[in-house]
Length: 348
Image (cartoon, rainbow, N blue to C red; front, top):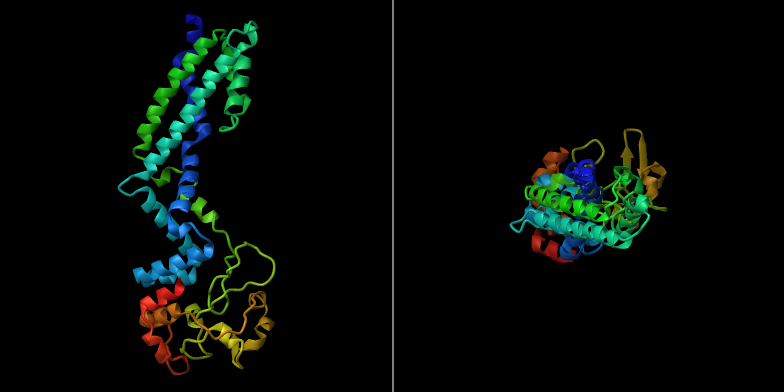
């Protein structure tokens, strides 16, 4: 037995148990658990992508920071990721330190799974007379026991077969003695863990659970509401917004376009692409891509939210887009009466 101990050694047993934990990858599993829990517990993420969009608009209005709105207008996908990432940080790193709790829970689950597999494998092969094959049989059983939770290639443990171990109880004890210290060491590491500890960030996993088209309307910048990326057919959405929010101005002026695309396509107005190309809005598809990939139905209705937004951030919008709301781009008087609360109430 001393010879076996010398060949096996604490270093070897620890090496294999660490390999098991690394294969299990508690952090990876924990990232999935965080995403699942947030989907069920955080209202913003418990519904559809459309519901999440409403939550983002409410958040932007409550914060009233134009820098956030700039990101939303110019790169809504980046704002979506930033929004989810912020919520994940708040959820995981609050005073309750949920992140550590999740990591330790996952670690314990894997520890118990591996422990159970060690005991079950020993019980199955114990007493077998073909001692020259007993370690091979033990490893076969061990991998089978782990199969439902942890995919461990049989070849990963082939080195153990060359140690000439015939005392299966010793193998059982050596594995168990190596498991606990390693679990405790990982727990100490987890106590200082942060979100950078994950190979794949939880917010990225959560983001993938809200798939959808990322194309923006070429006139107003609103994102297509189709929930299927690379979908067939035209892009479309329910509500368009003032074209000024995509930086459109009337030809050779600094006047920002206050109209929405869905009302323009019902009018006799035209738009220009450069100095030479002019197209009636009614025939916007003739302008080619990306215009011809959108289905814009005539509709003069506009959300109160954008009326409030344009009025509230008028100065910032004029500075950002280097234009003015005046003359044919003057903001309608009725827009100034819309309160933020009215705008938010309409979103529900």
